Length: 271
Image (tube, one colour):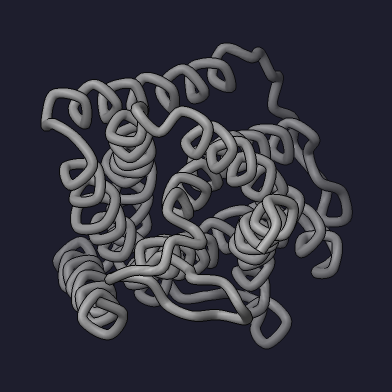
């Protein structure tokens, strides 16, 4: 395949993972509210999936490509990158206002969509880095429409796609509660995932142009995703479960277990 075709495949993979964010709004077309138990379990599922993709996939691949120090440096850089993005959003000053049932507070919109849109970029970078061995025929690759797709790319793309469902749900909850029409909520959820194909293509071009930085790149992607798990997604699950019996721990731990098991099963299936 030509370099342009490879870039197109990476872009499409990033686009599909980004569009998956819109699926998080789907439950609101069926019911007005989602129970806290289900939301906690969904956040747990996302945590388990993302930890698997980061540690078993990206870190493992980074160690296979280089030394642990390079991976550790990249991991730290990934954490710092997302931390800086969080600080950028947090530093913006908003004056919350009370909303009517038919209008959405622009502050709520900016804070909710803005944070998750920034978070989409490292997820897209993770997808692009995972495609580093695209087209190389060998062990750990899967034939797909004429491409030899790295199993890691399948692993990470599936993980990020599933992860984006609760992210879309996180966007939908405050916007639906504020009275926004369901299809507009879908639009904002999809918008938050648009940086992913851009980040995927950028990361793919970078790592394939400077192969010596592959261990750093894998570490960077893993660090960015682990930061999201520890600082954003896990606390979100804990917060939703605060009013549940046993503070929602059974639902959260169960979701994490299912997420870990499903991704380990995927590793066994593709590799």
